[in-house]
Each structure stands twice: as C-alpha cells, then as structure tokens.
Length: 97
Image 1 (cartoon, one colour):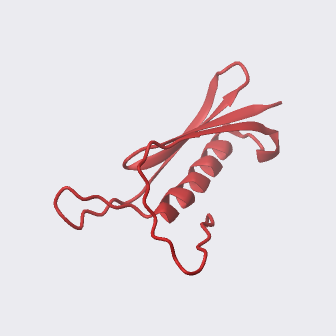
Image 2 (tube, rainbow, N blue to C red):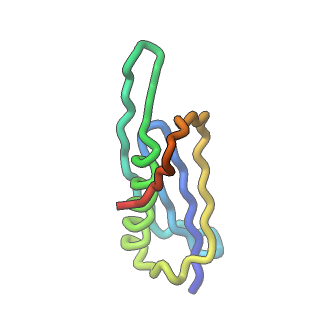
Image 3 (tube, rainbow, N blue to C red):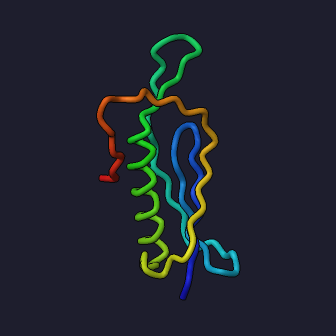
C-alpha cells in the first residue's frame, strides 16, 4: 500500500499525519519545541528543534499507523515563518536525533 504524510509546523509544536491515498487519516503525532522570549515582543526558536521535531513526529505517526517508511510516496510540509539565520564561517548541518 501507499501512503502520504502531511506536516504542520506551528508556534509551539510540529505535527505529522499519515493518510491513505483516499485521504483517510490513519494517525497523528505532535512534538513540542521551546520558544524563548529574550526581550519584550521578541521570540526566538532554534531551527534544530524544528528539524528534530519533524523527525520525531513523523516516526511517531508512522509507528502509530503501523506504516513502513518505504510505503510513503509523498510528503507535504507547511511552516509559515519569517526566518533569519546568521551566516556562519562554517556550514551548520541540521540532523535529526
């Protein structure tokens, strides 16, 4: 069988859902991440937390749906965000844990 995964990244967590090809939801999972507020009206999140949460949510949803990753044929991710990353002298790789 074939399945698709939809991912929604929000302000407090990232959520993943596994669906069959008719659109029937099979499982959902969510992984929270921290928001820091270093100044009034200022919010910061670590993009590595998004990446780690993405992997965790997808793995949890697949396990709950009892779907093998090899059977996933599509992935859609939405994460509305204005992203500013400081450019560093060396590349930073985001790797899920």
